[in-house]
Length: 518
Image (cartoon, rainbow, N blue to C red; front, top):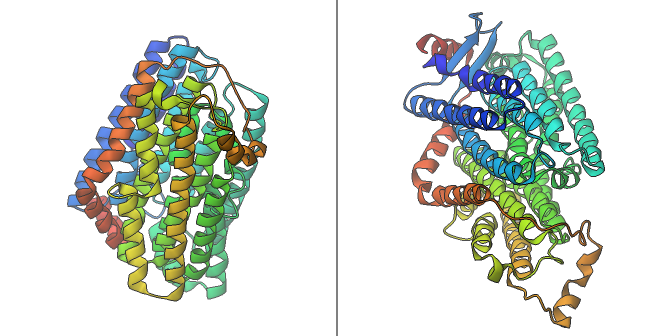
């Protein structure tokens, strides 16, 4: 089984190389990309079943002993996230194939898109299975290179500007991360996560705190945690629709994943949970208030993305087994639902020629299927029962209530307000874009006139036909969001087991045993 672990990274890299070779043969590129992500999903699902029933799998690349070699480590958490990421990446790829076939290379130049997309996938998977901090850093840098290419596809002024902001912010995060790695190696003589966890007690408390803060800051930038989230709402909406969807669904979750590893396994004895709780509350409320003030759908979703990262930080800061399990479940839910909403908005943009809720009207009568494709994940993100959003939020609130401190009740109240405002922002958009008639009353126009000053409120582009494959990919993702509710029981049980294992930090001896057994 250990032979499968390196394939999670090597298969996407080999696929990227092949798509680069087939740069002038569109169909071969598409076939290779689809096959690559399908194989990766099968490998990840196989590993998830294996580690859920047995022990984690560790592999030292090149056969070097555990403390010295690059360690790839697969436990329930990493296997689950790789499997979910593969599904999301495959669906978005199919969406982009339909867009590329309809529009040519204007939006997503195929010869560049496919290699960059698979390299992005390799970076995501490498980050999820990294067993040492330097390899995690390498995964982040692979992500940075590929994401800069993807976010600037088409070469428009807005995309280049957004790409520059994105790369500058990412480089700041990388500098903080690399500085923390250097200090950790100088102090402890290792970058292996298991060894760091064992040796951290040897450092003075003030040194531990400095290292802790450095890592949290680096990962919080990537996760778009307030106030380090300022870059996201202006960066993501400018990219092509499939790129925005995969960025929104996955890239911030890589930062959240790194925070989970940091808080549960590296610094489990260094407590900054009160600070994290305050930051979580601010992230939820500031993010959703920003969404309410927007008139453009992609910007609304970008701000809701920020606000819902706050729920994950909330669960992480509660720091109980139940809370960590709920956080993992909510993380999986958010990856799928947020990606689905951005795909639905991509369809709206093609059908109506705009994503401004001031410009789009009457879509319910003109495109009832599109109305449903937006409506279902919107209700899910808003947290209405019986959807997975409600299940995840209720589990988080229950875990906080079990702790029972005043700040926990304040976070519960903040989470409820955020959920209600999310529902308000998304349903207002649905009402204006789908339910509103072409001929508005003066009263309706007056009620929404204050949104005319919001960014991109008046943008109107050319209307385009929606290829069937784009609709099919979105329908598939909506089905997956419903599946998170239908199969919530088995999935939540896996997440609970993840929560239990994460609060029992793995030792170097256990890591060596896992390597021997694998």
